[in-house]
Length: 414
View 1 (cartoon, rainbow, N blue to C red):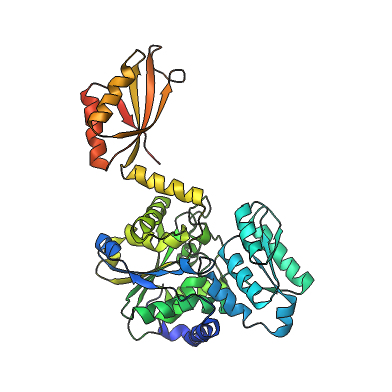
View 2: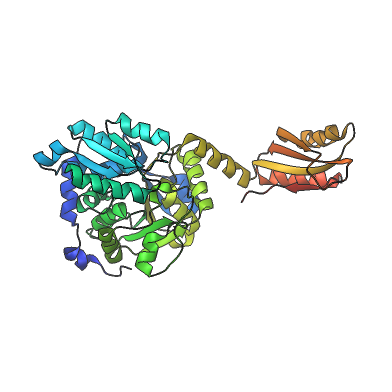
């Protein structure tokens, strides 16, 4: 990883001047999102934490920056013929939105299994959506085929110098708002955002530590940079950074300029999404919460430092968000499912419910199981979903139940 990388900038695909040029080019057409201090997260982690709210862009993600910077550099012929991309996420929406605004035809190729809501959102911005292939790789190959057949301009989601320069404007704004930032924690998928931001950071007069973050299930850039062969795949909450093959240009920049890459678990990503909603009252997708997840996972690395994190996107399915929030409540002890063994006789449920009442615990749902159980025929298993104030309150309830000679166990989350 980078040790003293600043002199290497001359040989890299993007320069600080490129990012400055992109900032002037896209000014006025992109939301200049705020960078705000979080006192609560600072107290929680021991670092001075500043958050860049890129989820406040019109399409709720930073991807607009690179897409617009690329579209604005097309010549008249390319504009007239249009552009094409393969994407099922934020790149598609950013490209579609600004292409429509500029009168540039946009075609997006998405895998056939792309959720309908993403297809509809992209079409609502004026793009033509083509569903092709069962995987992203298949969609990508078809997009490159159409690029050639229709003489369109392919806009890569991350491995393009114009894209990288546009994404780097995030760091320009952060450092203008908080000049004394000494650490940036940046999510990595293909590497476009961290490449642009590290280009800006290395051009500053003071040293800035640059830490990349990947989901444990998709350590593609981590593998590329460290020469490891960790498995890459799975169902991650951070689908926005679930990239199996990082870019060639971006890997070059990351190797030269980034200090380290850390991996975060799915559980920590869930916790970060929940905390951002509870503390900052803002919605982050899994990838958007990756910076905070790293901060929570490695507090000793950042304690005492002035840290900037980017909520790079806020596009998360509402049902998934609800699941994440409920799972976090369960892990914190505020929601629980208890399995209690009872005798199948009148008054048994009343006696248990009385203990819940005495401990002031709210019962949300009851479920009896008489058939599929290894208990005797006169026994039954009772599952009680309940709401408590905190883990200590839950522990008091468990002690009360066990003190009354009930066999009770807590149904744990993975």
